Image (cartoon, rainbow, N blue to C red):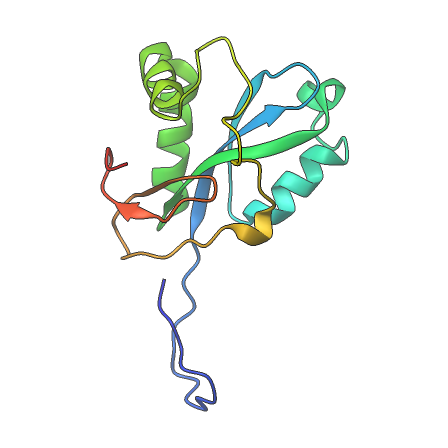
Length: 141
């Protein structure tokens, strides 16, 4: 995403819309859900307000992880990859310190959405564990 200096009056900046693939965990039964959305904060709030039929019986949720993409197509492809490819999902969960069957977050890693900052270069997939500093690339932790 691009930064704009405070006090700038130039309105020629193009707005950059990012799409997110996210992993949330139920605080009720520790199960995981993978999704994608353009407005990550809004989507997590919707999940916790029982607006997703398939998982409303598992609320509340906490955001565990997300990846940012420059367009909807790339985000959707990654979401499908994680949902359909059990090896990729297992690999991600293990990188984050979870077993594939679910477990509690390591101590000190349960944060609010306000604690998360996503920055990066367009066209580059960003990966960040919750509360971590985003790093470009696919396997850089």
